[in-house]
Image 1 (cartoon, helix red, strand yellow):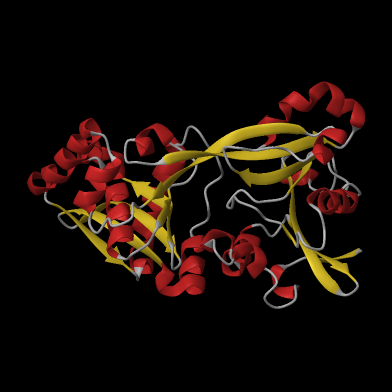
Image 2 (cartoon, rainbow, N blue to C red):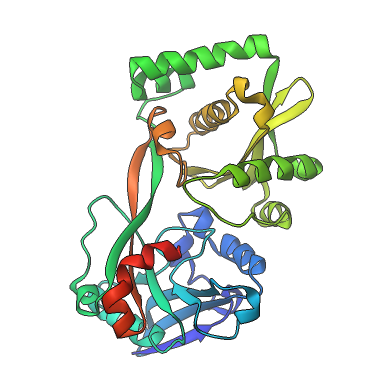
Length: 342
């Protein structure tokens, strides 16, 4: 077996990344291309595992520095993880007919352990029934589960929002959301789907920064404004915004990425001067309405605010990771601190 490494997704053999990203628009070839553009100072690696000239596995890793950029050349703050801050999910694949799971990870570990980094984070195993492969215990990895996602499955036979509220919500929460919807009549609010959201980009980006600044569960640096335009360029009409207006003023938006089965409300922006208008709740309701009206089966509501999303019928799914420091001594005594690196 041998690995061949590529430093950009554009160089890997055509179609191979579909084994990982075909069913998840936020892990797709197009999305990973955009993520690369956002991080020109970091390193991306797409590794293809061959056996007798046949592809039997794919591994991905991303190397970044948690220290200021002036320290970019030293390993002291470098972290290697099999994912990025803009993506989650399984960034690897192996042919389980031709190679066993522990063999794949053992081979991948031999590949990445040569990297000059402080720590390794193997992510993401998205499940509530995670069982770690014994290989990771043997190599003294620690299990961490710092985040979870909120996931909505549209019930079979559900044809409109009213049916969804009845089938998926408790009576208490159903009445709350019916009241929020009814209040729109007195608030002069309206909603629209905007496929040409570039024309409102200055306003939308300011609203997004509001949300990013107020984030508590998952803190991250703001995504640059150019990200919006690049999403539109790569995804076309599979990327759009639902806008919430009070008369002519945009007071909130949710940016949607979709494929044939799934709707992902990827980013949200809110004008917090309009708290009484329940902007987050209304935009999430409209995301659910859109999914139902367009025969989508799943809605990925992302990493934060599960308690709010649970009231709208979401289930929690844990994001499991395995991590270790490269140095054996440091790992033995300080591996409990690894969850703070992401």
